[in-house]
Amino acid sequence: MLSAILLWWVSLPPVPESMVFCGMQTRIEPDARKALQAYIEKLYEHPPTLEALVARAETLLPYIEEALSYIGVPEDLKYLAIQESRLNPYAVSRSGAVGYWQFKDYSAREVGLIINDTVDERRHLFRSSAGAALYLLKQYNRHRNWLFAIIAYYEGGTGAIPYIDTTFVGKNEVCIRSTTHWYALRAIAHKLVFEGLIKRKIHALQPLPYAGPAQPVWVIAQNHGLNPDEFLALNPWLLKGVLPAGRPCTYYVPLPEPEPTLPQEPLKALFLPSALAMAVPSVPAGFSYIEAKEEKGAAPSEALPSPPVAPVSSRQPVSKPLPPAAVAVLPLLKEPLLHQEWEYPPPAALSRSQARWNPFYTPGGPVLIVPPRKARIHIVQRGETPTEIAAHYHVPLERLLAYNRLPKADTSLPVGLRVHLREARPYDERPIQYRWP
View (cartoon, helix red, strand yellow):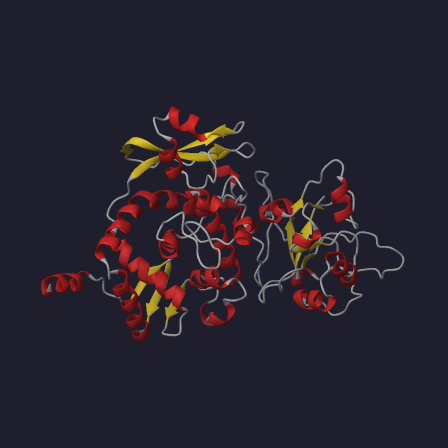
């Protein structure tokens, strides 16, 4: 018994004074090293459980790494999936978070995951990982440091603010102290443990695309020599025994023999590519969006000008665009996350519901496609005032003004301005003004 305890103790990874985490030089103070050591000992408490988790990680992490690489975030973020769910797609927290990355419903929908009575993509290996990468990238663009983005993954973008050391905002380094948020400490502890234990990458799953009519899973399973239960165990994102119609999907089947190279996810294009990373809607203060010119030999790009303001009714004062130094201007088509609530280009004709949801609609502008009670942002289209917007969305006027740091209720707003309806604009984010032809 004593020898087993000694072997367990010797196998514990040491906590270094410094390390590289998410590409950042990370210094660890003595008190923080003690806290990290305690977390590491906790992970080693039950060796059979740890061994089973390592075996699962060797099979699943390569597919998670592919998603993180595609979106363009650090590979070390893969350890958050172990920390969140132990790579169990069926994990459900007390707060209702689901899947590999423990997404809550509204956060999952925000990054484009589909959740309905047939599928729950929080349990899809690649899509949930790509969604988590998008969410983390959004928080990085808000807080300008990967450690703070990790804290925001747990606390939310605004909730992370009290735990941020502004000394390291915008820097490629960070210092870990005893006061560092426990979630970030655990993330580092997971890297220290699993980086040394995971020795192999086993490519045992083949992702295959499907786009067509609804199909019973027993038919697909039979085509691959599986029974329905085996197929559903490999595809826990399917809530019913059917492959749905609609958006193309990817399902997994086992490979007869593990392949030396990773079989590629065939439907990556359904997600935001890394080249559009700056389309994430949090724009930190000091950020200047530059429109890239595609013509060969073109002159260097210049910052986008503020769009013109549309005519307003005679009862409203003429609005003035925000000064360029105070606003970040984004082309509407470059922000796909926005299109969970708004459609652009607009449909040829608005449906009866859409006409009711868009009383200020300007022809050619974006169209709200969810009921106003579900909308989280509004895009100014016709010089509306905060009073009109608050009344339409049934938001208390004082709250709307506070959320968006607007001075008064009769302020006339520039066309394209994004107005927050359900939460405050991030403390370090300049107002965003969209541009469309």
